[in-house]
Amino acid sequence: MFVVRQVGGFETFERVATLLDVTNLPPCNIVCLDLRGVGGDVALASVVPGQTVGFTNPPSTWLTSEAPYTDTEFAVLARQTRASGGDASCGPVGLVIPSYNFSPDDIGRWVYLSNFTDPGNNGWARIVSYLGNVAQVDRTFPSPGVSGNWAFYFVKIDPSAVPAGVEPKYFPTAAANLTWKLMQGATMLATGNSGVTFREPSPTPLSLTTRFTQILPTAQAVEDLFLVSRQQVDALQRAATQNQTAFLNTITHTIGP
Image (cartoon, rainbow, N blue to C red; front, side, top):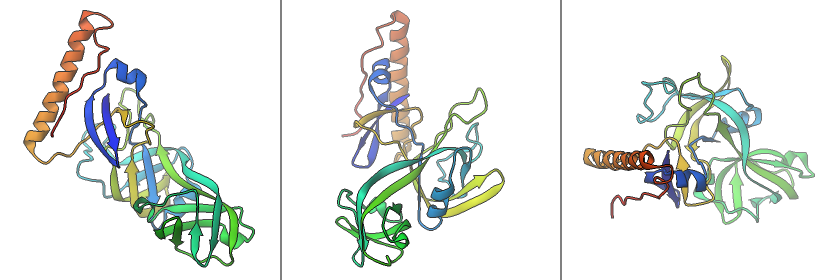
């Protein structure tokens, strides 16, 4: 396992995980899929465990030469809530959610609205722009409404849904603008072209990941990272052969400035 640092939407390799890390840090793997853009509402409304999500334009870094990564289809575990509340209002100005801070990442996301008195205000709405806590969506509201419920959802995959003896199957990297399809067996339920894979939210800057892929600018940088990782693994192995506690220390190595 590896320790990654997540700050401001970016992540960097910190170190090979020690037993102390495994005990103290939360596991945060890339198992989440945001279904933005056209088609996302259909998928989010119908997705259930046991379905699969697949991709037709995966990044070139998503290698498909070894199991379980011989294809780009992933088993659905559940639809989960990213954020929700009950203070939404709507009308000519747009959708207002006082307790939510919109960000550029919300453009294209679908929000599900409910509990408005006018049923025409309820249902799925796609964020197209925002200013502060007021968002413009892809449809108009038939009448002003207050005290509406709102929720943003995402899809979480099941990395353990693989044949026996094969490593868990995570999304290889965080990626955006993915062309995706939601399948029930051989039946296609929904498609879209604005999928975004991302890591589970972490309560701390440091977290554990079973799989880590980093794109580096030069071959030398790749070799340096490989050397650092190998040295840290060797050090842990040497410590573990001495006694059962010698490998509990945290190992760190700074890469770059």
